Length: 216
Image (cartoon, rainbow, N blue to C red):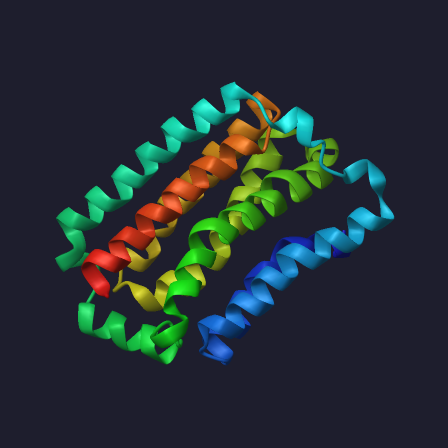
C-alpha cells in the first residue's frame, strides 16, 4: 500500500519541488518527466506482464475518438480563455510568474514542444496505462478511473494556484479532473491508450495556443 501511495503522489511531489521550491520550469520538467519515465520503466523491467501491447492499442476507432474529443477539448479551452481571460488571470502577474519559473528565453521553443508532444504521451502512459493496470484488479474500473483522475488533477492544482487568481485557480482544476475521467473512460471502453494520448495532445495544443496568443 505504501508503494502504491508513493506512485500516486510522486508526480505531485516532483511538481511541487520544481515549481515551488526551485521555481524553475526546466528543473520541474527534469524531475516530473524523469519520474513519469523512469519509475514505470524500472518496474516494467521487473514485471513483464505490465508491458505495453502496442498492436492492441493502435486501431482506427481509438484514433477517431481521440481526434474528435481532442478537437473538442482544444476548442473549449481556447474559446473559454478567449471569452474570460480578463477575469481568470492577471496578465502582468502571470508573466512575472513565468519569468520566475524560467519559462522564457531561448529554451521557450523546446519547452512548448515538450508540453505538446512529450507531456501528453508520458502522462497518459503513466496514469491511463501504468497506474491503471496497477489499480484495476485491486479496486475495479470505477475507482481506478476516479483515483487516477484525482491524482492526475492534484499536481495541476500546484501550478494553477500560482497562474490564476482566486477562485479560478481552484475552479480550473475541475476541467482537468473531468478530462482525466474522460481519458480513463476511453482507456477502459476502447481498451486502448492511443485515444487518451491523441485527445490529450490536442488539449495541450489548445493550452499552448492560449499562451502564444494571450500571454507571450
